[in-house]
Length: 395
Image (cartoon, rainbow, N blue to C red; front, side, top):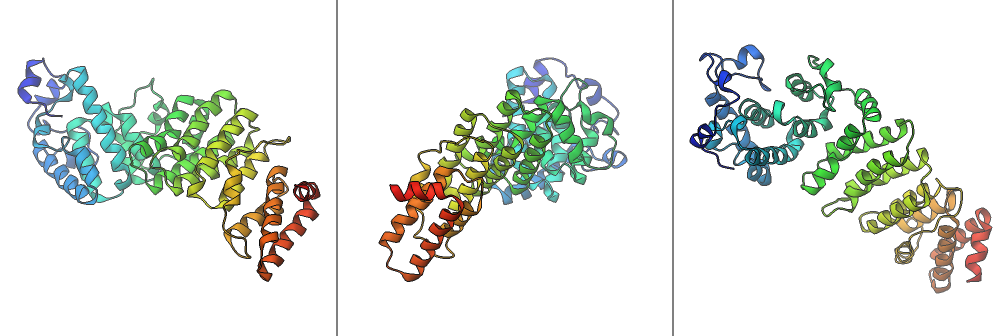
């Protein structure tokens, strides 16, 4: 992204002409993220560039990918760039560069160098006016922080945008409350889709961080519990935002467990259609390599509990159970089995298969302690789910 000042001037007058030709004192002053208005007026673009460059160098020492993404935005050439006269294709390229940088910057937002870098982006590129979506994608995970409050106060929000609900509070010194955000999300599906998809965007860009995962988990759970009617339209925007991140390349155990928690909460609020349930359970089983058997079974049992009738489990689940570590008291396998036996919502086919595996392990066991443990499991299954016990014994 290299643009020369001469090329810009040749394309026509800048929409910023009045601003650029104002008095020397205010020539380089617009909104400021780092300074109060009276102090910001004392910093021209040259000094703001030096501040931004200092912050960018510090950030680059923490994250090489962030340095790569911001190289053009903080280059000496950028000092002469006026985006208001760029041709559409170049302006779009600039917006994409800013969005990618902001997405990666989010994890460092509370660090001092980030504020310096943002000052340059606000003063030179006016990201608070032209890139509101990208800015809020970066800041929303910190929506109750002073950093969000400061950026909120300088955002140029259009009255017809999905962010218009923020306009009345633009002078506030506080962050955005979770309640206000969720209330608006239940009214505006475009906003809900945007907020719920922030994590997917981050996973695709390898820009995930813990604050974002926690934000996504909390907002998703509260959203599905608040939405008046979880109809097909709501589920069509909600489910991909939950199952999508955990099935993408680069997804981590933390992202997967976040999805499991959200899906378990969803099963308590919504009676899922059989087709949707099968798709979800297949996605859950497909990422089982990142979780324990207990975690896998816990979410599957919660999902099955949303249906009164028997649910057909993904066929790939059974090899996972069979390949679980050899059963012994205190093992992860035994914890998973206990969760099945003690949960009245556990599907009959899972309980039956657990009993079958216990019978097979009991037949081959030469360890007295393991034999006692397996006998206890079978006794518990026979007591709580005799039908599953009989079916397993008959096979």
